[in-house]
Length: 399
Image 1 (tube, rainbow, N blue to C red):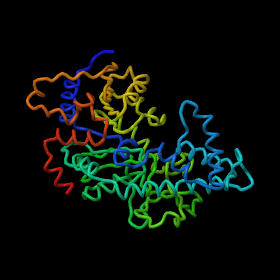
Image 2 (cartoon, rainbow, N blue to C red):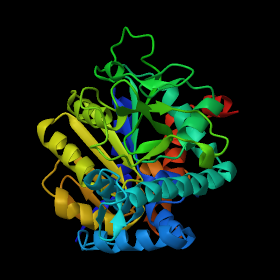
Image 3 (tube, rainbow, N blue to C red):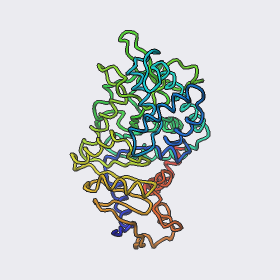
Image 4 (tube, one colour):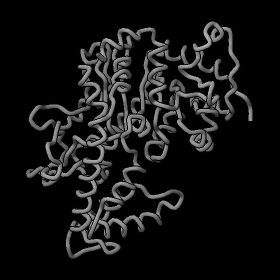
């Protein structure tokens, strides 16, 4: 396996960050895990352990059925939720119709029970989460003087990002408008924001797997559900409307896009819209729908440059099997990397710039473990801030 000079690539990375006019981000579960918010695997295990009675019986039946369709990996809670919603659709939620021993009515109750438990599990962790890292990231992003809107896509449905932005009083927009029951306004995200728009410097937040603040509400006029946003729920068990977590793509009024559908379109249009540096952090590339959009856009837009930061080298090797032909995708792992389509191992040799101070590279390289640290979200944020030269301004925003 060839050797890749990590010091040289970090210099290239710093230059890229400094001179790219348009920078976007994609947050996966790893960014929340860095703040001790449970990931999909942890949620799956917790839900499995907490369900009792008929809920547990039906959950096991569905989980076992799902396992046959995802043979290459272990079924997670999102796979199970998707399957439950298929059962609800196939049975029209009727008590007299069933699939694998689970009636439509039971599937509906199980869906709500699982989402309620997910809400409480994540909320409990959010209450004690240290938001410092996320607040610093968005403070850094908000003061970037760029010509394009600042867009962040995420598969996370926790409210860490919203809480961090609001705590720092940084304006953001997610496509919802209103005050009493904010509703999704599709037209607001169909176009890329131009220089003349006064909201150009607002953070754009697109939560493509739903959110703990989204709920389905039945539209009595059209007899179809719509999504509303509720800022704070005192007790989720008392909420009549269903939580929107990893929403089924079939459950929406076909005459009007719901957020999770429009966000996928936004991701595609954003990646195809000319010159762009797009950075992935905490994302394991396990969602095939998202991957298809990303890889297609990498092929179609030769002005798109993607950077991926992984926490594990196994993820680097897995992605290499899918992306070895992509010259505009560079991947940074702890000890391995993909640079210009080539898989290699990091080699750290101190260049002149790094000899001035023995600790000048400790914000991206661990001498103790002999590895790159940027796959850790906290380390990546520290690197961005250190490289920005605006550390004091960022800290003042956070405070």
